[in-house]
Length: 186
Length: 172
Image (cartoon, rainbow over all chains, first blue to last red):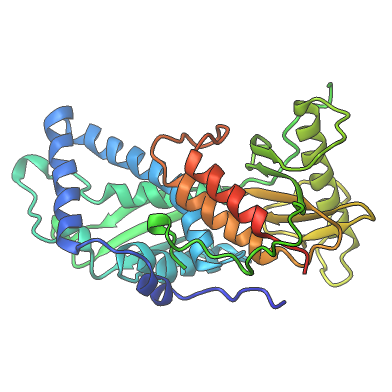
């Protein structure tokens, strides 16, 4: 039996159950709005969104692996491509491009031209420090941690703050090898 | 493949009434840190260890076997010493082994979820079936908001569909 071939983002996207894009956008907006009311500090909201994303990411990775049939990536470069082309497509319906690699291939930028989370959104003056899509960076961090890559994900450009695209910087901190989890003394 | 709604439970071949004997013996699911998320048994007349020791032994067997198979790999170049920690996805991976009394089929996802199914030795290739079980795990366990990752699985829906599916596996 031949191993199952990895599926493309489009193929997976076409086959999964989807929700209405506006409903999704508005629901996310409502969450951020509520967090702003509850936590008051913009900094706290950024943190909370990142944490929520992380919690999503550690579960989402299994769905991603199960549906896309991606088995393993040889290096971080391939990982970044897979996130941009398959991951983003599968869960958000858009693709990102991978650019700006540094010399040792441990950090890169994911650039999103189109971002379904931000339709209808305008940041008021009081929320200029808000990373509205901070949940995405959390998702990527959480998902990669589950495949043993410790990463740091930060926003470089944000259209809501007047830039021309969304740019996420993903930096690979270290890869954690698999170790025998039990102690020897038993 | 979609599993929403639970109506689309597919079995590769329907169970034949004549072979009503269950061909699966037991099953384990481990996560990346060696926690046994699920243990199920259908047919295991002989038990010599307590549950905890048994799980550890199984996990240890797989762990060692994996580093042995990677060490013996004739085609890959970068091999460390035997027992050296490997990055997930590094080295090769075995998918089953067979003895005269049982067959053990094994699948590991890159996220470290290990699914082990012990069956009758004449059972065919179960890689597809294990993938299917991984999909069940995603739909009924990972997506269950009441389930906290890293704890033993107590989802009825998962248990029943798993039970149903495993019972439908037949010796080809």
